[in-house]
Image (cartoon, rainbow, N blue to C red; front, side, top):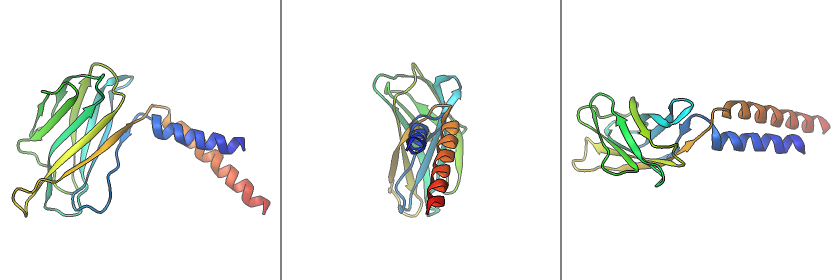
Length: 175
């Protein structure tokens, strides 16, 4: 029973507290984005680097806007853009990047989005807007939460998975 509790606890800790951030969006839409984030200069968790991936199932969807929103206690200090993108910092808890000449086509990823906050964000969410090259004026939106993790997550996952595997093997041996 202790091994089971240890395994489940380690996996839960890893999922809620590792150094990378990831997001998940519903599957089945023709347009789909993925956003990964991580502290840009650990252990300074107030500066973040983001990667935008266009995982749309149809090539006519291009990402032209990425926005990161943080909790109300956290303020955006400054941000950097990849080439072909500009950044808007008009809202205190929001970073908005828009493409000037670098839309992200389906199947591509783009790095170079960086934001510096006055403190470590407690929560982060993202929004991506697409243009549809086949239907003028169609601009679908995808969004998700960025799950922020702590550096020890990999060790916790390995420990939890090993303990769980040992427990399963032990129980199968009893039968």
